Image (tube, rainbow, N blue to C red):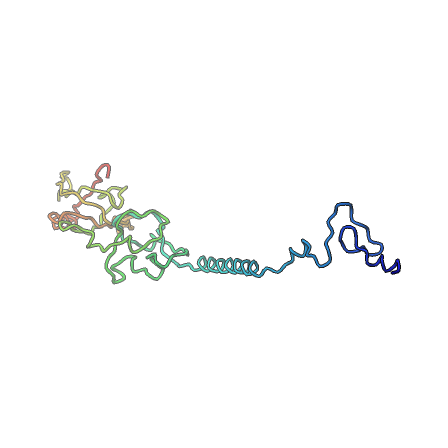
Length: 248
């Protein structure tokens, strides 16, 4: 056997592949991959279909969640909102509400812009509805805030409608206040007044007087059934007066 043939069969001392001509030999103690042995780089590049499928599912779920979120935010309704603080027993007028576009859950029973029958009442041909209690400004109104006016009264109560001139009622009167009803004497020079009973201001607003530049009070009062007829009679004669009960 020739020397060249012997050298061709001699393995590297480390068991690694022979170096190519001109290649730099590895440092002492370095591990050199054998022919056909997988390296760490090859292992990192190994195809893992399970992990790929998991990543794809995660991305898809995030995209679907984003779409649902955008749709829920964009599904808004034009609803009625209290423009000011609203009082128990109040009949809402157009000036008492404003319209707002808000995101509303389908199971929330809010008053939409199309449901303006809750405003006024008699003028719309619907039963008169009044507020069950105090509603602060900015509250989204719902049907639960209202009840029909007749349902809100006890069996021994009645409503009377009044229009009083300035000076016949307290200037700081508000819905929900308790007032005393007096009937003044027919003679102008007679300062006596008869106490008739106590009432609660159910609804009220002020309107310009038909005779001067003052404002008349238009109000509904809750009174006892026993004084209803007498109170209406005194009102028709212009002799009914209201005074505010302190602390009401």
